[in-house]
Length: 138
Image (cartoon, rainbow, N blue to C red):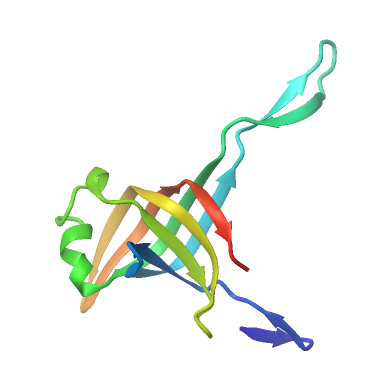
């Protein structure tokens, strides 16, 4: 949390993956994209849409760097479990200064992941998930 011109601002500078109420991993560089499957409805003789209709809501989550908690590393990281068999998780964006959860992407399923092996760091990069919806808790 920071103050700009005496106004409190929030920073969603960290994220955590939560499974059954327990934090199983923490991450940085979180991107969440919501899509509405929006299509224009056109009338005969016009190139401009008459209205827009939302047909299919989807949420895509990308985490640039992910650190697994040690007890979850063996069952949820590559080699511990197949990608398509991993359980759904919630992804929480939070303000590191006071730990306040700003919003949560619910019921995220792992779509892809890549592994980088660095000394003393159980780390995954470019983890992508598909979520069901976003809870705005602010």
